[in-house]
Amino acid sequence: MSRVNIKSTIKMQIEGIKKVIIEKLEKAGFTIESLAISTSDEIISKVEIKEKEAIDIIQKAQNALGVQPLTALKFLELESKRGKITTTSNELDGILGGGIWTQELTEIAGGFGSGKTQLCFQLCINVQLPKEEGGLDGNAFFIDTERTFSPRRIVEMASYRELDVESILNNIYIGSALNTSHLFSIVEQLNDTIPEKNIKLLVVDSFASHFRSEYIGKGRLVERQQRIMQIAEQLIALAVKYDIAVVVTNQIIANVEEFLFGSPEEPALGFAWAHRPQQRLFLRKSRGSSRIARLFDSSRMPEREALFYVTESGITDAPFPTEFYS
Ligand code: GTP
Ligand code: MG
Image (tube, rainbow, N blue to C red; front, side, top):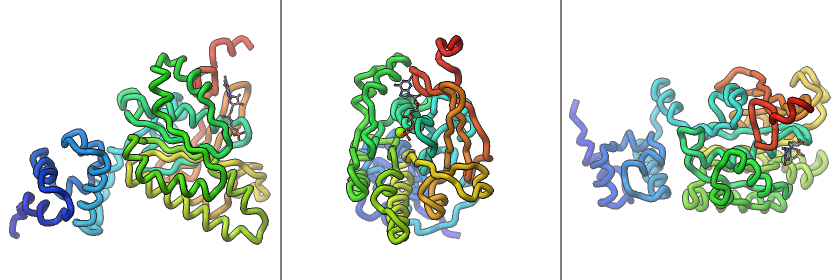
């Protein structure tokens, strides 16, 4: 078998990448195969280039190699590289396999006041933490469809953890989506914004609301489902392409066929949507500030429940001290 000259393989196959960058990549020890399975962070940490360029290189290396089957071992290696954002609750992180993962669409469903928005706020703060503290050293983009984003609450939560409040606020980008077509155009622009602003977490709160209010009645159900699937695919593509975590919130509806979900309530948006998120978290109120989260329909983790609290300091494993006496 003839030996492949890695240098010439890179030069020949990564069309459209500047010679000087190829030389830098070679010097850092990259091969076309390792580039194809690297994350942009890994490339940036070894070679001085912009995130957008790193993403382009990964894509071009993947294209050059063509569609090649991965072994389960390689798959495991790739999976272990994926980032996780802590929820600040060890119990909740536990059922999620370490927190909210990148390259996945995570759904947080639950009723009014169940803690969906509070959990999203907490994640917008936590994503900014260094990796060793459960963050991704990155920024957040929060798509607000219900005008519930509260900078005051972010200040409160960040202050309790003695974080630099101004910097935390400065690294959360807000997009207000007034209707579904507005939501689509914001998501389209994210291909530029994500690498430019070092976004590592994208939140859509609430994902369900505009779809449910705009597409009313059985006559529009097919159209509604098509639009939901379209945007779900776009969100998943962003999660994978940019190695970011995508979190969307969903409302709940009465479940007429209780045996299907084992509960009198189930997440809205129907059967087709139900298969899109890789992780589905169902929150429900418990006593006082406590909440129960159930992970279900996960391809990676068993169905389990976790108890956590929504306190003044944010999401925690234990109630706020004053609540012990209330
Ligand atoms: P909907 O958006 O209405 O569907 O509800 P949600 O699931 O997003 O609820 P959200 O996360 O907004 O609120 C959950 C609970 O968090 C509320 O019922 C309050 O108990 C608590 N909460 C909200 N804001 C604050 C706050 O500023 N301080 C404290 N301590 N608790 C809050
Ligand atoms: Mg909310």
